[in-house]
Image (cartoon, rainbow, N blue to C red; front, side, top):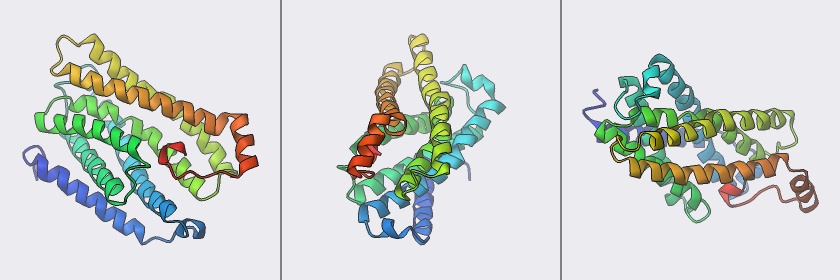
Length: 251
């Protein structure tokens, strides 16, 4: 199938594929205390699909840039068929995940994720339909390298494994990859758009989307530092026993 000639079917097909993965993972056994809570059960299954997407697309994005480094300096027009396929796959995932959040009744507690997904989908779908900014979207998916550890962190918290050695190692890997892959990729793309604003098509749209996402990831970064590296926060948790929040982004 030529993905570039059948973009709508490609994106919808990958969304269905990720939904099928969700159904398969839903048949796997869950920790007992997770099963007893409806919200935790949904979080576990949603995060499992997200983790699989990150394992797939993060390294894929890095390999795309390594095989075609010119994409770093020509983010509007340069791309490969493999990078185009990557953005179709990821667009399908974000479409499926948006539907999962809404249809599962988690929209209110996960509104920040819905905002993030709407920004990503608007830019990714523009890219695959216009065949522009595929390279930019590929660089943006460097964040998924960090998401492997970010999603693992949340799954470990749901499993009540915050005191484990695995969680301790993961929190440092999460911090390092957050800076090297998430913050660095976002800020590079922001700098590139500002530097080439006059010659890039629809630069204002992409710069607005980037600035909104930059604000969000900086807020998440501060929350992450507070949750995993603040002694005051740890003392508060030990005193209150509040290790779990129904609001997705508070974890």
